[in-house]
Amino acid sequence: MSKAILQLDALSCPSCMQKIQGALEKQVGVEDVKVLFNAAKVKLNFDESSVTGDALANVVRKLGYEVQSVKVKAVQQ
Image (cartoon, rainbow, N blue to C red):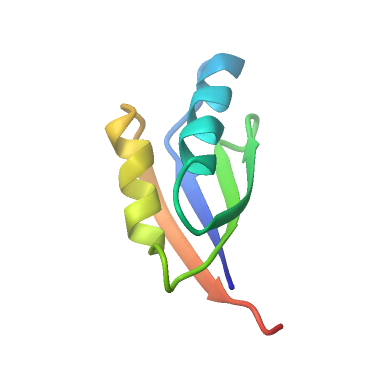
C-alpha cells in the first residue's frame, strides 16, 4: 500500500472537489481519497501494483485540473 499527495494549482468550488474525488475513487487499486479544498490537495491510499501515482495525477489532469506535484510514499503494513 502507498500514500500519495497530489498538489493542485487551485480548486474553485466544492463541486470540483466532488468531481475529483469521485473520479479517483473509481480507479482500480484506490482505497481512500480525501480532497482538501482549502489546501488544493488530494490525499489518497492506493495499491501500487494496480496503479501509479502518476496515473492518478493524469486522471485529475484529464478532468481539467493542473497537478503541480505528486509525492508518493510506501507504507509498511
